[in-house]
Image (cartoon, rainbow, N blue to C red):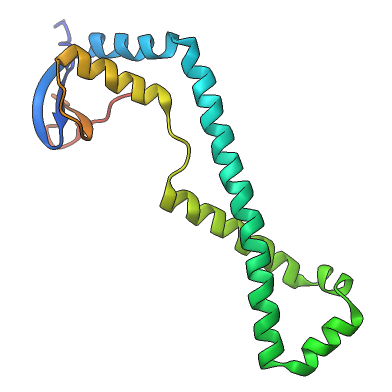
Length: 161
């Protein structure tokens, strides 16, 4: 029975190889980033900031959507608009249009998350900072770890978060 070799991660910054790190050392860096109690508070703040951003987006999107919907209804179908105003909005709230508006707002929040980004993971930021310090890399930029599996040279192994 042969002993399995430890994985060696190749570290790239902006597409340029800057060093290598053993898997055991990389896992130790991950554990170090998870031991810092201040990061849990920082992550909670990030989640709250994200929730606040979605809350404000919701309360900006709904009135804007309602304004343009009423304006287009008033221009395209004035009789229906007058009927809507005379009967009041409670009938509108029980209509299927309400479901459409809720789905539209949910989709806009999802799209905003994709465009502006969701929650920043402060644990990954700390892990990257520790990795840069370990490799003595001061270059700013995207940090990528690549490990080629010995069983399949065509498929890189992705690092554990």
